[in-house]
Image (cartoon, rainbow, N blue to C red):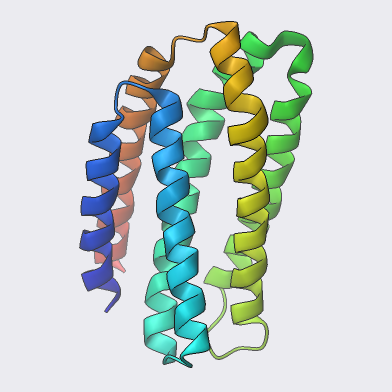
Length: 177
């Protein structure tokens, strides 16, 4: 099942990435929307008391999407934002801390089984962390970067290139596992 859901996600992700490949903010917003839909789908599975394999497949997809997204932000987007924001770069420091919290939860989720205590709760809390983080990026960081005149096209191209490489790497790793 995990294999079936990954190509659909990759197609959706690739589509939204190509549509916004020239703009960093549009690319990141598309990622945000995609992962939000995944969290909503996961909650529907929980509410329907879906089986462990179905929940695990979607949880793995969520963790993969978040890992790729966090990586491209940390490697490319945040350094550019830090330079552009200057004195207001504390917003990026906060985002880094939020990423660390999310990564810790992702690691816990990945080391668990879907029927373990707190598995669904950890995914719910991860979704809440991500929702908070996305709100701060979209409401505070993105507008400030637009105002600062960041070249979102060149940053977006770099984000897209790195994202595609990471997605391919993760797909290879998943096939090998």
